[in-house]
Length: 275
Image 1 (cartoon, rainbow, N blue to C red):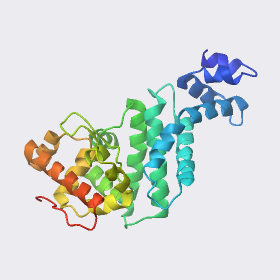
Image 2 (spheres, rainbow, N blue to C red):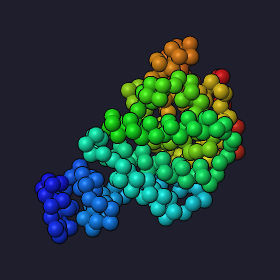
Image 3 (spheres, rainbow, N blue to C red):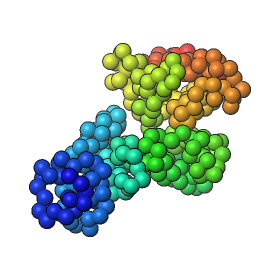
């Protein structure tokens, strides 16, 4: 069944809409006026399809004072923004864009409630533009863009992007599902902090992780930002900082080991490694 057929149907059944793919439903939503029962039904089906994504994003912040229900509601706001803004003629698929919108909405919720550091207005504006461009590129590329791609699109330097990321980290939770691929430490940051130890997952309080990250030497903070936020390889980081790939790999391993130990037992001193 095509979106055109759906749009033409006077009283489509739930089964007719349910059998449609995301692109058909998104096209219908784009073409139908707000308030249309057909549009509302299509939105409801998409929300149902992606509720597990919202739940997954909200679950990462359950250590915060906010209730699970509140986090889910915030996440659904982000999902509806994704559904209403996604252009099926441009985007490759809704999933990556929805993930960016839901995660961004939850982080924005925390920023609005708990602004922990003073950030210059120029940096705030850069950060807002960065998020907007990142969402646009995510839809266009069908994946999370690298900082280099964002910088090129915004016509700013990688240093500017890095500064905005650093400011953002001061008052928002670290994305523990940031992907790391193509090297020995393949996986996500959460997995690298202790995949086989169930106590690690219970200890992954986002605010605690941010605090312990700030305990690291500045160079190691920067390396982790470039690796997990900038999606740079160890070789690229080494070239940028004037270090060998082996040295970068060692610093990443030491930093992750330190964070893991601090999260598991905050009261015990941990070896921070070389700086």
